[in-house]
Image 1 (tube, rainbow, N blue to C red):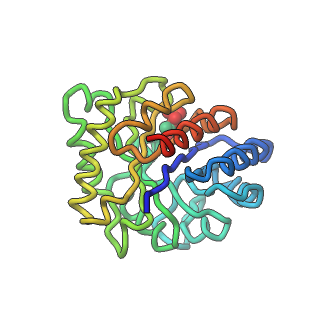
Image 2: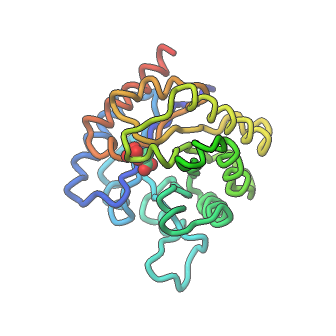
Length: 253
Ligand code: PEP
């Protein structure tokens, strides 16, 4: 069975209850495109209300703690995410790797904790601008995967990888389609080397300044199975255009 393209919005630290109207509009739009799997990752505080407000889209967290419960003031665990209605969790976003100093080992532990709680996982990797300029982008990304891909149990089954060049996030700059394709092929090779046949079915999303204008060409790049979208997922208008681009590609190739 063909795997559906996966279009995921990361709302980061944005989204009060007033934005549930936008989530409802995205949900209505998603229901018109059954050939695309759509999801939103709002802040923790909005997950429960969003879950109640939508029918056809996934709702997930942007991070989780490695432990299921305990004395970790201010943190949220994977079982707590499940309890509030989440069905997936992003781990290893570059903003957390940079600002919260998350290591590959910690990201792997988070991915495994999320999967153990029954959540799907979107594992983020990506190089900095200096790493790309020095010609080491592929090594950086495959090393991140070596250190952070989950290994416990049936790890590939509920896993997506998001390739997000750090220099493309929120900047309006995107890699060339050829560079996206080359990196996604390298990621696929690493997934197959790690998981065998199951690695061939893991969706590899592109993320970094995806918008209504560039989505079609980025989604058409080699081995791109969807997109992780920040800024352009905050309004139904721009996010729906990206979902529509994925649907058109899935239908017409
Ligand atoms: C992100 O933060 O995951 C992201 C891709 O952001 P943006 O689309 O705004 O670049």
